[in-house]
Image: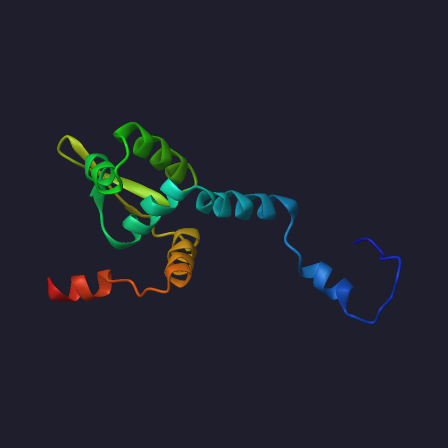
Length: 124
């Protein structure tokens, strides 16, 4: 641990002792980067609330299937979404990872909404 040039009696050495390593910060930055694109954010928002195929996501968002596929590939790489094959289609949903759950909560807070899937699930 580095010794700081000034001692301001602020407990920073103890705080620095708890700091995650650089790789953990890089992983977190990569997860946060997924929120940096409006289309990807819309896809995440949608998949927080439903399971859907590429064609329906594209139609719902008014973008091409190629655009949706590209964004889904990035989200899958970060383990934020998963796909389940159903015949010829793959239905995508939010992953059950801590990072995906965190983004779900962040997205809800950002848009000041409560997840409607709880109400939908209880009706079925």
